[in-house]
Image (cartoon, rainbow, N blue to C red):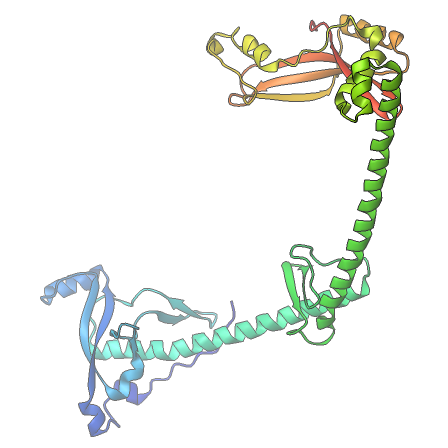
Length: 377
């Protein structure tokens, strides 16, 4: 925190009646004085016939020349300026304390006035200390912005933050302690040039991005049209009369035509059983083998499946993979593992199943089929 040089002067007009005019001496304001008593103070209060409570509130008559020691809230309630109170730390800092002052014995009126006068003086020092800190903070921010601006303007590849996106007169850059706002209407010097440059770079990238996306879209449309052409030609030669009729009218679903092609491409494996994706039923049967999970009920939402290439294979699984490669030499054959777990009870025994993924291509169309393999590892 910042430090401030504080000089608390005991001004005679704050603590003595000297210099008070006759008119001021007559005009008085009755206000509340709120303070705390320590345990010793509460005992002294009881001995003096008081109530011995920790929080004390008394009425004090304040002459007109001491009204600067009084604070009045929006409801018109006036109290002596005892809270918040201020103290000077050994390093010279003035700190604000929200609680009322604490006394070891019931204070006199003069002691309350002295405490209020001290608070009045230290409050001004506290405010000045804060103003100095704010000024230094602003100066530090200006220095940071200047350095960021110089680096940004000298580095063409650097970009402003895109959330929120740069505007012609406003943008945000990443600073050493977080994002920093640049405003052309408020900043000075080269700092005010940053928003326009950031906006120019942002718009240039937007144009490049749109162009790239447009080219990618054209590429994907070309691939899709190529697939449709391949499907149309295959259906015209190999499809059923019904499929050919629907294809001619543009009503044949692409996935149906793709599955018809896949049936033909994987015909050497037509007698192989497919990998059954009935995980919930298999996992439920697996868990019910354990006494603590004999009543387990697994649904699709309860099941978590992790798929990856297998890291080991049994002799039977390896033989099955080799057989697939022999029947379809141009295919990619991969043994896959599927680890099943129960979401609500991750500590429950997991189950790992295996399948043989076979992939073939027909022109631009990629066809996949996964087949069952022996599960005995």
